[in-house]
Image (cartoon, rainbow, N blue to C red; front, side, top):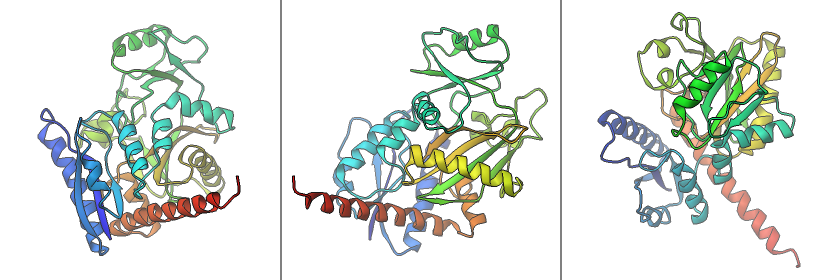
Length: 335
């Protein structure tokens, strides 16, 4: 089978290490695909050039690793929508899921309307400080993922601190989400299609003194930093049967609502000291590199990395087949 690997080609101002990180992931996925007997072709996506779509249409299936275009995260929405329009099967979440998940205030509104527990939140408009929330609160961009915009100053304990934080980030993001901070444990629940992977927990015990136990941008992307060393993943999470069932139920509800059990994703959850899980967000198409969280969960599930990649491809092909069957059935219905 001909598999095209789509990825962000970046731009001339990218740091060489960022370019290397993208290409390393691309080549690792390519190697796994080849081990499964697939032919592969690399398809870089560049800003202002849609010729990559012609290459897509010459493939049997696309492995989508495009997390933005030219490093601009919101353009991921457009890239996935373009893949949708080609009607070539592709891995990962649909354009609807990616678009909604990248607008956290909309996703949270859907969660609340469907009874999925989510911390109280407000959208900060033009720097106006929300008044209905209880402190402490956390400030984050509504339209980003991968902990972009989250650092040690993201948690605010007073109205004055919140006002200063909003002033600091004014103009950086299109929408700013302010959400009540949930104390307690943090867990991640991964999915491939409808299959749930073992729950993983973030151990914050070694965080630097005075730091909030949150996953900052540095914790995710600055290898060897104090925040990185202070956020140790533990999989499977030591939750106990009853709490694990409760977390799994909440995670699946969130994944069904936003992810629609299509593609692969990760649900991030906080558990209060009294055992109440709250959904922080649904992450469509999370990092699928060999040393990332989803691969770690898959390993505990019993899948090696190559198996994970091939499972993701199989999910995409199965989804495309179900869509063809549904369309065929629809066309037979008399109007």
